[in-house]
Length: 180
Ligand code: AMP
Image 1 (cartoon, helix red, strand yellow):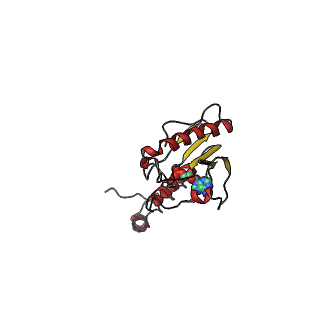
Image 2 (image 1 turned 45 degrees about the vertical axis):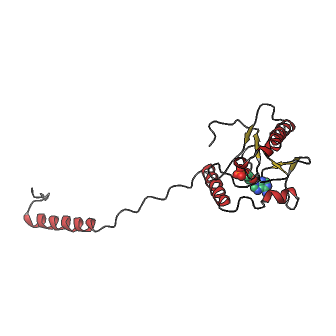
């Protein structure tokens, strides 16, 4: 190893310099590790929303699926909702957590075991068709003349959170594909 040369020369200075370097090295080797990087910034709102929807869907799937739901209270007018269409068979009201400028839910007033589309039986054909026809009427009423989207979520993987079949009518913005 080459010795460090003092600008003024002389072995005394050289020794002092070497001992200072050794001291500095020993100090550096005992320095705590650099602080960990700051935690990542919060997730974008859309991702957070997606996560909470998924959590809601998983939580809902854990409860008995034929139990009364919040939609029964809306049908009985026990809780407020913004109803946009109603007849003796169906009710259409604005989603409390809209995913588009127009977001309406269309539900049958009588569930008749139709907690979700996967539970459909032949006797449900008429009400299923009526739900879709009502969606078309409401889309017209809402002025969605350039198009709209119909969604029926089913089961935990389909992100269903309310086990009373319902058709989502979404419109008022450009939709993208594939759906998330
Ligand atoms: P899904 O996740 O397909 O089961 O849809 C259930 C929908 O019901 C969600 O979009 C919720 O925002 C909506 N929702 C839940 N409670 C209410 C309520 N009290 N009024 C209006 N919409 C609601």
